[in-house]
Length: 539
Image (spheres, rainbow, N blue to C red):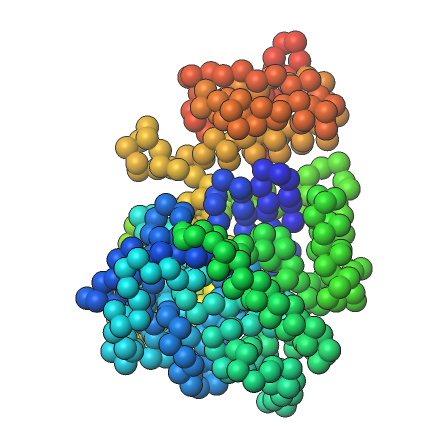
């Protein structure tokens, strides 16, 4: 974990390789999991939905399936579903309880994948106009960030996540995350949760991390979550819509709450403030994990030491090489993401059996595709063009391999059958803009065909590069040459940037704008001779 006042990053590594990356900045205005007192702007019976003003600019989308209409008696498997991506990556209040809601389908106007795994169809629900009216105030929670031109997706069926439990004030069921295996253990946890839940006080889901939790810890957490809900209701009564009522946890706090467990070998953080907060929290919920929390004190940046920065850069590339010599070509578009599988120079050992050669290439591609979707946080519709396979048995093997590796993804995914053309259609849960879209903007110079880093992203790249230069101990003074828009960002948004960084690195730093440079380009010039040393320290 890397944190400073300007941004926070979380990188998850598995098998010595970057598996997921998450980031947050104050200017991103992240609202996933936040609770608002909204005002209904319009009710649309034709699509059984309403638009609700929550004060964030774009009106939120509220479908009839997301109203508080009482528990619909979902079956156990539905009730125990886990939202994965929204839960782990954002601390979203949807969390493991996400599939206990009503309704179904693929977003219903809020974008594909916008729903929460619901069971009943819209036709089985009462008309939305019978429950809410224009101008009415309503307490809602954000389940999906605003993406592109679409406003946020909302629910009135509030859920509050803790470390071991998710409390749902308007539900009446007790469930257990389906990721907890073993019938006896599930029954034990459900019985414990039922015992601590007073009658007519809502519903609970025992989260995956609560597999070994004690009854005492469950009861303490339920009391905290119930008190939080009482405060939310009281605060809402004193506010005038639209207004925020309750903010979700910050990125790092949410990840520690939702993810950190004994399955992690170590947790490393480079911020003393974040480290102290993590230690205090872990002491209160799981002291046995304290020896796995480490404060990074090395001279080189934490992400550089583990190669994270370089892997993040690779995650933006269009072409992904495969070990066999083949490659993937990943192309995001407005409607979907296409992935093309190429054999490249891979021809296999036996030219007499091209089907086996193609199968091996496609199997490797399936494994890498699952990793890339998770790393890039690709959401929505995905179409994969595998190399054509004649045998149905080969197609089945590739699909099983793909689904097997998608099982490590906390985001809900679904891969359909391989078509005769070798295409696989997939959907992956999308609750926020991808890291790529958040870090970049449309390039005006090329008519919108490509993208460039935003000025805020360039400033952070400069900061990391200067830290590398300081760690080398070869530099005393540096001139940073940037595009005027980047210089303006520093002057207006971070006026103390160079002074703060200079004090920390013991380098003399100067900023110089150059209108001939690209928006996302910067150069480091060293010493009185102003020798260009950018390539020496840039990632």
